[in-house]
Length: 553
Image (cartoon, rainbow, N blue to C red; front, side, top):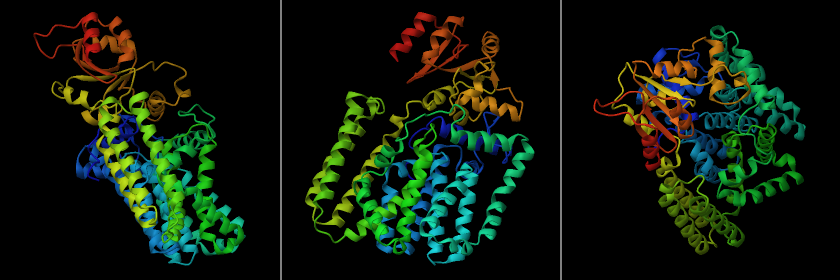
């Protein structure tokens, strides 16, 4: 957790969700989340409650908003260990929890303040507690924990908390023809517990916002899955295959062998390998489920990591004394080499992801992979040494990545906000010009005015920040923070001092309409300027002057 505050908030997610939690504390409204004083009901409430608790105790900062995702990530590893010990043995449980903790995607999600890891841990815990209970271990306790975790998953992300357990458990029972299990899972009591946990917020949210159920359930749960509307991130059907391969590195090297071994055992004696069948059905269902809609996000696939970690761990535990590991070592070395090439390309040939300041970190990652390959070569006859080498490699890679994360965050406005705070007084107005920089309200701890074409009839047909804000107005007609361009220019030419954040792509249009402007700072693609001088002797910058300064910076 030491590195949670080492890098600025990533936008839009971290900025948006963190600001919603901050405004909960500010307004005292813990039922209806708000972002920049506009209702935000696209997500359930539990994540915001957790963040609000962290902000209350630890202050308004990056470390606080990432505290609970990180803590829940640790909890997911502990539950994987606990259930893995019951389902298999202590050795498998330890290996599985280590695999999960050192998987790049899981580790990264635990250092990122959004909902994906939390819902993944709650859904995974629900399924793990279920299969552990069904296998005869602390049946009642684990079953009620399963229902409780499903309820928390619902309060974190919605209907997938119901869909995933029903699909996975239903297919598992169907394939085994074990319908008698349904009589032993306390379905009525469990459903009552589930409803007791989720209904209070749902009822209060509906009372406060009469259109809540339709918007939350129909628009953002069902319609989004079916992709009937227009939503962001359209991806091909195979999108999650490379995500799992990279996100589980280097453990994906033995994923195929692990799955094949489990499938072979199930094929010959399914009743003796019920747990392995459950762990195979689980990721298969989730990958298929999320591959159907056009809209896909990387973090959605996180619930498949605990079962895959257990399958891989079970396979490795059986191979731990095997001295013929040449094939595994060769695959690991090839994987290291391939990843090193990818990092090199992204750094030097096509630096789309890795910015120039990140070079020192990418070089360190390549060096780590090379050293790892050397260690693997000398450890090829010792599976324990191979396992430890993989663990150490990932630990070093992830530490390097965390230390360089601030250089990957090229959209943060924190450097500009730090400068702005030197000049800002309560009477000033802060404006986002035709783009909502969602970390600005959080860092400034105040609302901002957002300029956009709010009369556009197509706003609701695009999945972006404008639709989010415009939809929020339907619940609470508060347009104070949302203004059109005409209103902005009236204020700009008035007596009030404005500070404007805008993208460099919008600057040409801006300067053609502004009589004068005072340049403050530029960071990456974001410009900060004002309509009035911060220093009495300062002269306004004209078009040629400011263009020259921007190019220089």
